Length: 347
Image 1 (cartoon, helix red, strand yellow):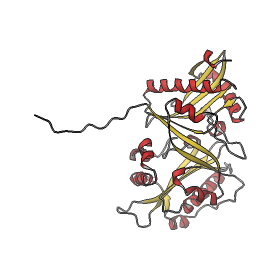
Image 2: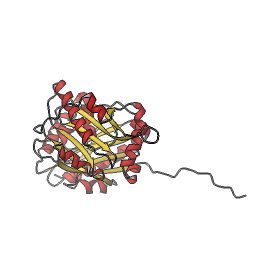
Image 3: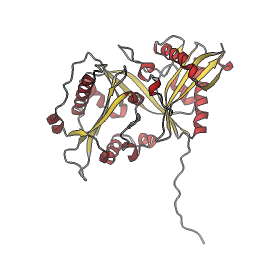
Image 4: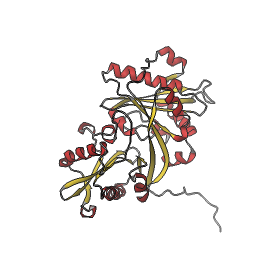
């Protein structure tokens, strides 16, 4: 079977059964199947059950493309769109066929790029494991790699963490974030993030002020699972408050899963700050809310950028283990130009 005889197109409602089976084949790591590949150990946690799309959660902003050949679906590409920033994120790219899977996926990516240009997408993001030709595939399509994330997992069998009391939270200077923290969060993230990465991701103060919806900042390879979770953000105030009294030492983003998936934890701290209190607070908050909602303990996943080291050591101290390393890539569809400036006229 040659991929040249098939075509990429937008998915139809009648394709859903075939798409589900294709995702399951990729999850089982069939020898002739390829995916974005988020490998883990222990309980299977893969692309399909991390980023699965119940019809109730599939929004008008999401896009599905398929590769059809001789009446059969041989490839799937799924995109989640952030309408607030005109950014698209590829969260699933699957294909079957021992000889043709690579060509099928490349054809799907090319189809996506044409559609993104037509619809005015500013940037396309993807996170993938550096295997099965994933990274070369995207780089051939014009994507640039700009970072790596470690995915760490804390299994349900790990020792339980007691929910924090109000007194303990106050002693650690941890409180719920509010809209007034947007500027301080922006400054905190800018202090932690290398300048080249900050320029690429272009997070603005307004992005930190978005307090609802499935998309949250900062960006991570696991962000799409947040649409299936109840998410809250907590900040840790600086002891001296900084020059203007609003400085923050760190924050923790907590996502309590509503579906059959792991809970989510994201921590960001200044280099000189110990993240132990924030991690313990986040784990305790997840435990309390999961028990109260009857959602059980499905384990906790967290992404850590490699430049945030030694943050991963603090997570390992809390019972996490690294289960995958993910490459972050981006493609800009708009050309950046320098801002115009006034120059002296020559008379």
